[in-house]
Image 1 (spheres, rainbow, N blue to C red):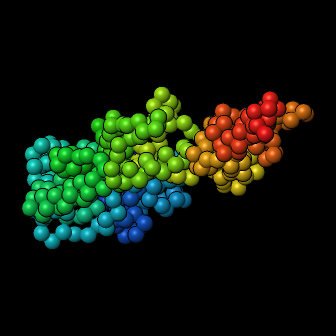
Image 2: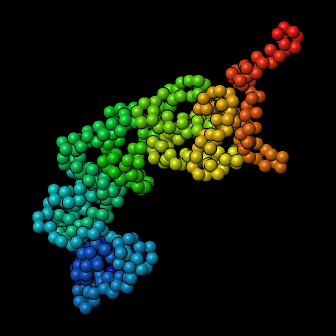
Image 3: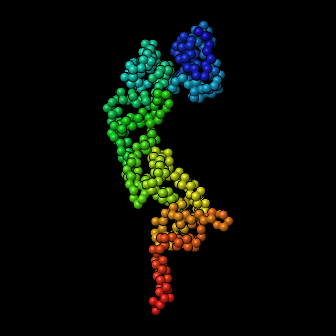
Length: 409
């Protein structure tokens, strides 16, 4: 056994004790500064560069009991170089437990009774604590945190299992309440969920943070639940009204869907049944809004960028936050008045409106057409044949012909 050991990054008191054929308790006893100096947290925190006296050397020379601390960082994050802290336990102080038994240990460290029998590493450590009469919280914590049971779970997981084991009645009531709240969220959004699914999600939310088999941290929170709801949206029920795809939805989904239809209309995004691009955009956007990975501003920004590239003559209006329909309003009204129709019925994809918004002048510049020329352009449309002015014009021409041939006086 070495007389002295210099702590390296990644070392723990347990690993040092094992390498030197001793115990954590003896190392702490041989190095009083671990309990006397607050920065060592009762022996629960050591630093890379710290020189520790091993128990055999301590009995031979008491003057070597104080280790030399060459670390410069006194924080609590795990170190990866020679001047960082090596955290070996949670930050409990090295206090004593007056009465020590298995029930006390279970309660203190949130250990469910069923876990002890299922995890041999944990049972061995707990038995050793009791047999050796260890009462230092720092030492107990160090020993328990070195077990696979501790390393493979989060504090939330351990608390969850302990509550489930020690107070099943209250646990069941909490689980039912959480499941009911989840059902309300799903139903409020217009998304179906079974009771079994709600209970399953409620259990995951009560665990909050877990470690999967690969050691990766997985969080169960509202963000997790939002993604579950987004993926549960039923897009299979659709209708075609006026040649447009309409998804049959209820609750919050219906409200969100109506907003998307309006945005698509305001930016000229065709929503016909044959437009698979629209359906793909609609479904992905709905999922993003419910999951919280998208917000309405993101959608508007994307539409505005597309509109600016398609209609450079409207860049100024679009850059001020107007929708394409609002920016094109003067040209829409010019065509609607010529055709004697409601401006809101003019589709942004109408070929006459497209020509008016993307007019190329004699110099090759793409800009908007002046409103007088827009009206002249609109008069050439077949839709103009059914207007009152067109009928009057045709009647006047017919009367002139009849008069010229002597049929009218």
